[in-house]
Length: 145
Image 1 (cartoon, rainbow, N blue to C red):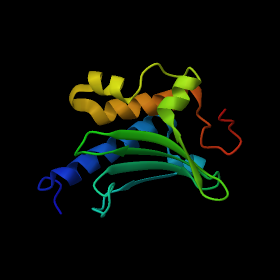
Image 2: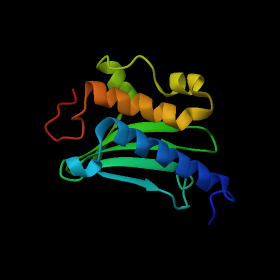
Image 3: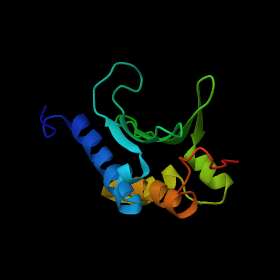
């Protein structure tokens, strides 16, 4: 389907492109770290089927950073996912950044000042904070607490 004909698909493409280009700006080629970058573009059923999703994954470390945006409501989630036995833990990046003194602003602060460049502003805020304060967050030996 042509993105110009489907505003939801266009939003998902803009979201993933903003995070992909910002990741490469800060960290370089993901293959250098053996990370995977991917986005979900399909229209799935369920409560999060229409969301734009971008993931940075360290398959060897069992950790991922997931960014999700709901075009319908404007809701946004940034989380660190850690594989544990059994299952998975989810950590809010906003809470983690605040608790460790890495950032004073969160999604709502970025959204208020972003204007039409919302996705690029979000990507620069979250990936810039990671680059500055915790670039090894996806490594299994990085202590979170």
